[in-house]
Length: 239
Image (spheres, rainbow, N blue to C red):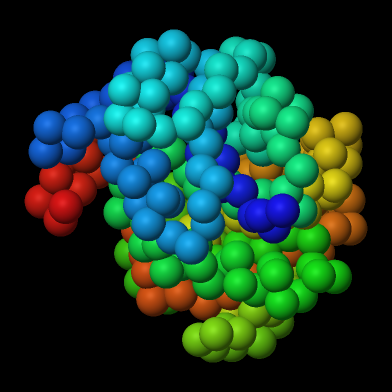
């Protein structure tokens, strides 16, 4: 049995950038870039979970695996949970790769996967990178807060995830890449949303507020998430 599967949640209903996953980057849809980079990792089983037939067809026409999910989901983790059920996956580790990160480094996926395999008692993990002054002041950049300095190849327990920093000493640019045990994801979808999750629009706060630790690892990789037309133009210059 393969221990790990990657599931990429994706939908067309983005308010700031409509049809975002299908926007072209050098002739290829953004979601296809994410799928290809995920496939370049050491994880064999990669799926896209989507509510939209257009995305489903895009991935299948590119030779990938995709599954149609309901439109009711408010978080990527909830969409992934439905996909696991429909696909009847028996993998222990599920990696959530955001569908708007076409520059995600496959080695970052390997980093988080290797950590989960080596630490079977860890339920949830993610990654973060160095943060600039401009990013610190940007509410759109999520900060991962830790108790100590985050070092390469080391994972620490996340104390918090915030959009605005106050007196925190150690904080980093959080990257939207998660790995979780399948059984913990089953618990997650049945937990009540918390005030922090709702007020900050950060689904990871549901884990923390329900006393499920998230471990965060350091990476040099800082893939730009595409949320605006300006982000898309930047990506087109880099890829």
